[in-house]
Image 1 (cartoon, rainbow, N blue to C red):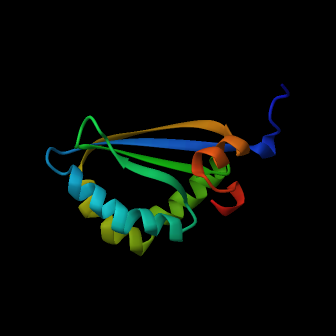
Image 2: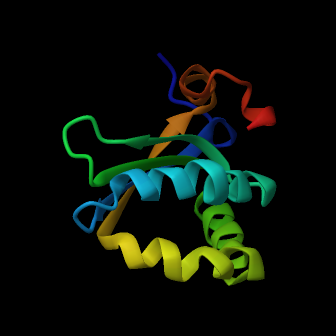
Length: 121
């Protein structure tokens, strides 16, 4: 099997948030109703956001970016926006810590994972 072309590779980011005890349900509500739709309006490709099934105070966010430059540019603009800053104290007040990992994913697997074409992400 041939290796994927550079244009065929995307960056997949998975964030795990460890939340302060008892804040999981509220964190998910704020994400579901506020921050995730906001990210999408800003052009961030959110593939999913999930409350852990084994720890109610853990939360996963899965996003895709065209490449590392796209991730940096879009994230910097988003996290400096007045819309995000209106949520920042609330969201970060529930976060004990978080970790982000990235990997590459082919366009085909991105489409399979997201259920939509990469162009529509």
